[in-house]
Image (cartoon, rainbow over all chains, first blue to last red; front, side):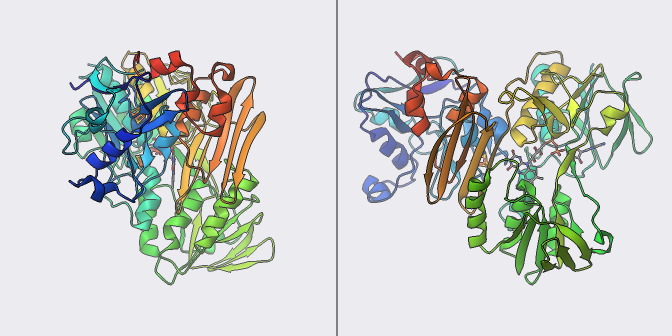
Length: 148
Length: 410
Ligand SMILES: Cc1cc2nc3c(=O)[nH]c(=O)nc-3n(C[C@H](O)[C@H](O)[C@H](O)COP(=O)(O)OP(=O)(O)OC[C@H]3O[C@@H](n4cnc5c(N)ncnc54)[C@H](O)[C@@H]3O)c2cc1C
Ligand code: SF4
Ligand code: SF4
C-alpha cells in the first residue's frame, strides 16, 4: 500500500508559491508552462497558508478516516490503496466536501468540479510536482504513517 | 455465521454494509429494499432532472458493490414488522427473515398535509425518490407551468432542476423566506434573489387555501395556474417499524452513540434516527447524507461486534444554486461575528468560548476548518481566533496542533 505523503516543513517554506504553479502545471496536461498558466487564473491543489511570520503549503492529508469520502453526496470521492481520489466527472460541485474537510484541502476548479491532491498519480508527473519543484526542499514526499 | 438484516437500501444502508464488512468478512447480509434501484445518491435526483446526472452515474457505489460485499438484496420488498422477541423481520410477501443483528435504515417519507381540492389535482408529485424524478421528468414539457409547494432544500432543488426545462416555475411557502430551517432572512434573500434572476417566482409567507385541478388559490388572494404540482412541504422519519415493536421513538428513532435502539439487537441509522447533536447538545434528526453514511457505518461496525461511536454529529448543510453556495453548520446561538458585501454574508456564532455555528452565503471559504472547530469543541482561547474569523485557516492553530495535523513537521 502506498503510504507516502506530502509533508511540509514550515521553518523552511519561503512562501514563494512556486508549488502552486508547479501543481497547476503538472495537472494542466500541457507541456509548456507559459502556455498553461500565463495570464490565466490558476487552480492548484496545494496552497500556501500563513502570514509574514510563518508560511506552509497545505494539500490533502489522505486521512485515515476521510470526512470527504464519507460526506460526498455524489459518491465521487473514494480511497484506493491509501490514496484519496476524486472522480471529477461525478462531482456536482455542491461544496459538501469543502464543508467537512478539516484541512481546507479541496477547492473548485474552473468547471466547478472539485480539485484535490492525488499525489500526481493521475498525471504525467510521476512524483508530486510540488515536491520536485520546491527550491528549499520544504516539501518532502515520504512515509510517516497516516495523519489523524 | 452471523446473520445481518438491513431494512432500507440507500446511504445509511451502504454505510452499514461497509461497516459490517470492515469487521466481519463472512456473515450473511440481507438488505430489504423497497425501491427497485441499487443505493443511489438521493441528493442527485434534482441534477438528474436538470440533465446533469445520468441514471448510470447516480448509483452511490460501483455496480458490483453488493456482489463484492456478498449481500443479498431483496428488491421491491417491504418490511412490515420487526419482531425483536423472535429476532425476525416480517416482509410484505408474508415471509419471515431471521437475524442476529438488525439495522433499520428506512429514511424518511414526504409529509403531505390535507389541502382542500388536492384530490382533484391529477398531475401531482413528491420529490424524494429516483422514481419520483423519473415520473416528473416524463410529466414536464417545455410549455409546462410548474408549481412547487415548499421552499425548503427539497422543494428548491426540484424547482432549480426544472427551471431550464419548463415554461415557468413558481414556489410557495408558508415561511417568509426560502430555506427557512437553515438560513435567516438576510441570507435567504441573497439565495432568493439569485433564483429570481434565473426566472423563478415566489409566493412567500403565503399558503394554498384550495386547489382546482389546474389552479391554486392562495391565502394572499393570488391565483396560480399550473400543469404540474410538486408537494415538498416536509419530511417525516420512518419510525413505525421500531415504534410498533415497542421501541423508543421521538421525532426519529432514539439511538445511543453506538446507534443502538432501545430494542435488543436492533440498530437504526440515517434519516429515520435521532441522535446527539454536538453543537446544540440536544437529540435531533440530523437528516443529511454525511450523517446517514457515518451512522450507518458505525451501526455496521457495532452490529458485527466491533466498536465505533457516532458522537460528533452536527447539523450542517451545503446547498448551491447557479453558482451561489450557502454553507451552514451548527447552531446559531451566542455572539455574532459578521462580514457582509452586496452578494455575500458571513456569520460566525460563538458562545462559552466555543465556535457554535456559522452561515456562509456567497463566500469562498475553507469552511471545513470551522466545521471541525465546532465538532471538536475546540476552545477559542487555544487558537488565534482573531485571524481565523476573518478567513478560515489552519494558521490560527498553535504550532503543536498544526504539527499533529500535518503529520509531525519539525
Ligand atoms: C431532493 C433531495 C436533495 C437532497 N440534497 C441533499 C444535500 O444536498 N446534502 C445532503 O447532505 N443531503 C441531501 N438530501 C438528504 C439525503 O438524501 C438524506 O439525508 C439521505 O438520503 C439519508 O439516507 P438514508 O439511507 O438514511 O435514508 P434514505 O435515503 O431515505 O433511504 C431509505 C430507504 O429505505 C427504504 N425503506 C423505507 N421503509 C422501508 C421498509 N419498510 N422496507 C424496505 N425498505 C424501506 C426507502 O424506500 C428508501 O429507499 C437530499 C434529499 C432529497 C430528497
Ligand atoms: S480532502 Fe480533506 S478530508 Fe479528504 S482526505 Fe484530504 S485532507 Fe482528509
Ligand atoms: S463538491 Fe463534488 S466531490 Fe465535493 S461533495 Fe459535492 S459532489 Fe462530492
